[in-house]
Image 1 (cartoon, rainbow, N blue to C red):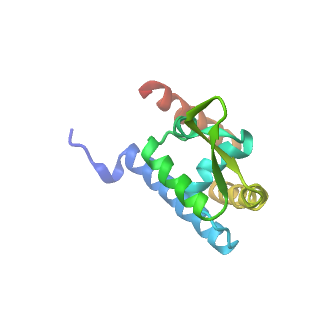
Image 2: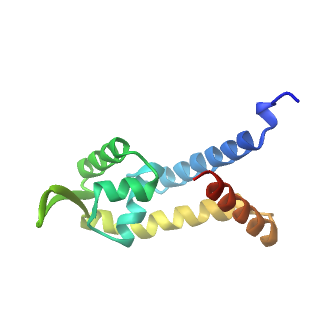
Length: 143
């Protein structure tokens, strides 16, 4: 049997992810938010646990340290986060939200909720739960 990329499960999954990513990006632009979905991914963890180490953010976001460092550089340049040396270990840099970063939580959450709701419109709740279960099992299988 020949592999058909365009009709494969991986292609469908990737296309859905990219469509949701682009849609969230558009909603964030329309709301005039100064961040991207990639930056939002980092901020979600800081909103829950401010002061994480850069290395912890890399693990939480499933990104490599270099990618997270670039995102933090951008967020710091926009005045959304600040870096501080850990008082117990100067080799460790902790990332803290500024007031501006804290203020982005609610409007960004509204965009994320709208993105998910719009993406799942017309899909029965049972199907959504099956899909979520399948995606979690896929991750478990290959992690």
